Length: 253
Image 1 (cartoon, rainbow, N blue to C red):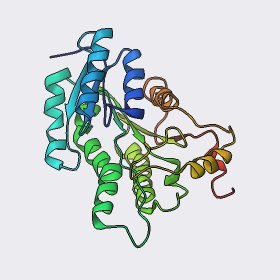
Image 2 (spheres, rainbow, N blue to C red):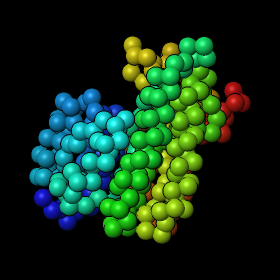
Image 3 (cartoon, rainbow, N blue to C red):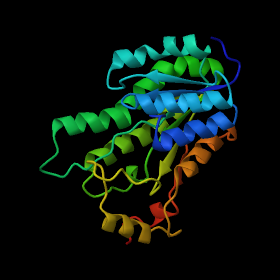
Image 4 (cartoon, rainbow, N blue to C red):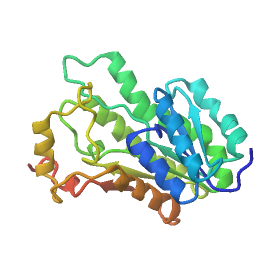
């Protein structure tokens, strides 16, 4: 099916920050491709919700982004669904602690793959479509790409790689494709009772060091992504921290 509206692919788009980005861009008139791996029910429900607002304006796409063959199959699938691609949001991410003495090779592979390897190969594979559309890439980085989060060394390393990828691809894909990033701070805590959960006292310590003295929300990220995609035609190679000022106090608390 060919679609004349602009098209965005949001990885990890079925839940949490990804879903907020999807809803926000859809409200701006975009056709949204909701990528998922494990969140089939959430993706199906989100697509149905958006179809009720505007028919044939949202599609779900399954892919295991650890598998390069599944990444390489995405351009054909996207062309079948929408006829093209105007924007890619590399949002899918894995986050959990890797304490020294306990970190495993599986941890390394999981965190590096989701936060650095997959975004690179997605950007490379989808670049021809984005070049044709004079499109844009937005990477969801992290303020801890620059200043580490204790006991999360591999995650921070992976996000640092994604940050450098943003800077490098902004040069390599120009002038037709813009590449920027958004670096969230304390926006949405990991789910409780999971491997990535952050203890309540740690959460309070983090919030106490945020100049705005509160956490953000997924919509804060979504609005910034929307700005970089829709309202910033002369911005590339930049990463915007959405953190209530936290990046200026890291290491000072």
